[in-house]
Structures are given as structure tokens and as C-alpha cells.
Amino acid sequence: MQHTLPQGIRVLFVSGFGPVVGRQQESERLYRDLLGLPLEHTEGYDGYWHTQAVDGVKHFALWPLDKAALSCFGSAQWPEDVPAPQAWLELDVEDIEAATRLLEENGYTLLVRLQLEPWGQTVTRFLSPEGLLMAIAHTPFLRDGQ
Image (cartoon, rainbow, N blue to C red):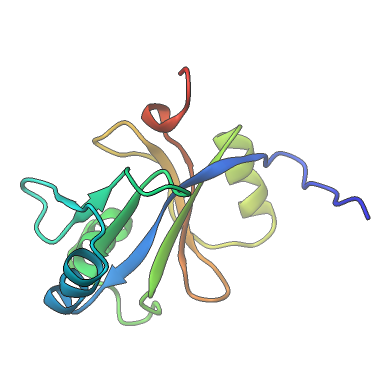
């Protein structure tokens, strides 16, 4: 059986995944201390522990809910009328502009549209039907040979 790809979106790789953290100390204890993931702290970004040294994913991070809210809404408070996500998933795509248009054409409510992050990544964020904080992205520093 052949799977037909949607027009405009070609996922290249999973650029990031991790839980959205509401209980910081408990999450750090599990992922960093008990599971032994080689997480590094991002200076000036409280609670964001990340790594690019776990095989199978380009970037894994404990993303505090207040930091996710800041990225999506410009405020450290997640809106009460929007379900809070339990995890985040980023997919790097071949053509982020076309993929963003396709999401809009298919009725997805975008939280962020083609936002350039301070670290050079461009993202379009939305919530999946399961409540994941999703992003399609263009992440130059994670692409081989780019």
C-alpha cells in the first residue's frame, strides 16, 4: 500500500520533543537524575533543560509551561481557555511557508505563524487533536550540511 503525501508538507526529521513541565523539580529528578539524560541548563532561561545527545531525536528538552506560553502568546501565563499541552513535538519540514498555508487551509488554529525564534529557528505552532503543542519548523543548525 502506497501512502500519498499531502501537497506542500515534506517532513525531514523530528527536530524536537519533550514534556511540557508543570512540576519542575519532579520532572528534573525523573529525566535528569533518575533516567540520566545528559541534560544541560540554558543560562537565563530558568527550568529549560535540554540535550542534543540522545540518539533518535535531534533535540530533547523539559520545556516549562510558562516558557511555552511566552513563545506562543508573549506572556508567561498559559491562557485558561486553551488546553495546556502535556508535551511538545517539532517537525522540520522542507518548505515551512507552504506547510503553514496548508495547515491554515485545513482549519488549524495557529498559535504562532512563521515566528523567527532568537536561536534562528522559524516555527509555526498549533495544538494537535491530542493536545500536543506542535510545531512545523525550519531549524538551520540541526540540518546536516546547511
